[in-house]
Length: 45
Image (cartoon, rainbow, N blue to C red; front, side, top):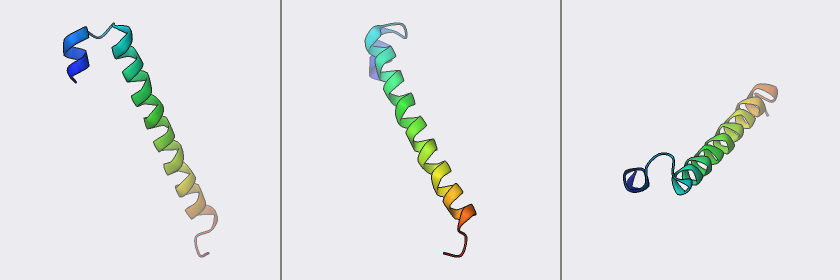
């Protein structure tokens, strides 16, 4: 990651980018869990 190399790990810009990536990852996991739950609760629909 270029931002990490340029600014360092403790820079506010780097921390904001990390938080944004983690938010996207949480949303991705939530969608995955919803799909799995839907498949388990209605397997033949």
